[in-house]
Length: 247
Image 1: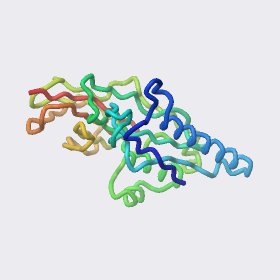
Image 2: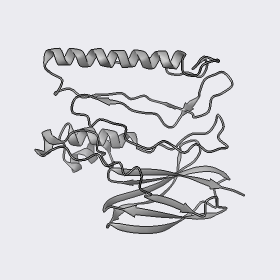
Image 3: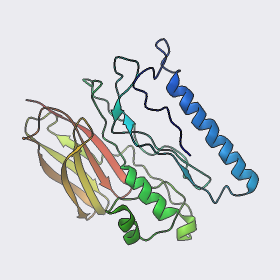
Image 4: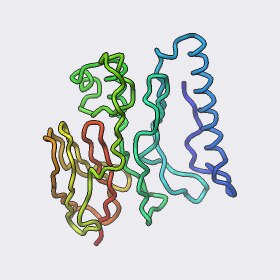
């Protein structure tokens, strides 16, 4: 199923009330459709056998343009629905820079391919090597779906560690280099730096790390001044920190 109309470069909201408008109407239609679909599955007795997910080929920016709309961006929410989805919202509210403009993007906290890896692991029961083969790389799965059907165990706790500081930067702001302090729970750790347009400008590291606290130097001396984002991925724990490079 596809639903168009979300390319809202203009008139995304009403001028006098930003809580209503074209975007709100589209989301209401999506919500009503999902609700009706789940009701039908329940009537058929198939609600435990179907998993639904939304995706889009583009996200949006975080500041509106001059036409009451937003332009193409690097981040967006994804919705999973079904009786086997672990309820709640995975992720933390982003830190929006005070100097954000209509050109500013946010770095995605969770790579969409980590969501795909989660579905392949806990819904389709693929082994890690098979997941890597399907996705053409290693993308760490998240706690999104009850794995009971694959693992034969009870629901594992969806620990977002939202209150833990897993990634910090000092100095910040910085001129040439900064230091990232990060925590590994063991397993693969990937740290990447994104620019304001959401593009990866540097993969700081991508390797297996024992449990513990670590520090790594990041050299952005050849990059222009501006807002950057550092993202830590360590299995299901992923976190983003704003970076500000000044002249």
